[in-house]
Image (cartoon, rainbow, N blue to C red; front, top):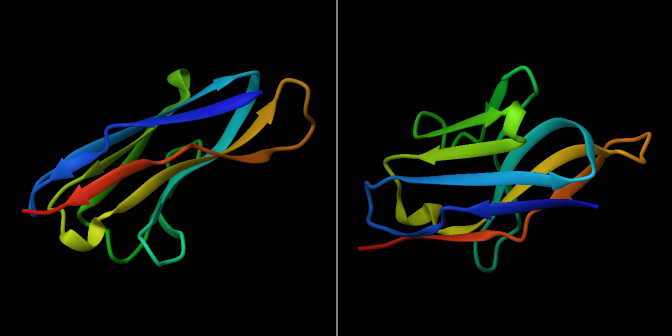
Length: 121
């Protein structure tokens, strides 16, 4: 059993910053790519950023230069530092990880429960 738990969401004013964290726990053998996605009301879930085990990153054009994804492999944790935030960043943010469990031979996609981020004055 593998669980992803996000934290760090909340209300922030336009131009402000937030840092999200996501910890993977359980029967983990190995974690490959980790990432953050978001879903605003009435919209489809979209990619925000991803990071490989070696630290290579990929960002959505809408957040590049404002957001930074990082990870601590020893802690099975991925972070999302969000700066210069805009009202259009308001969404539920979900953590994603490709995990191989102790009893698995394949990597599987796991998702967190989501954390709400609201950007408003």
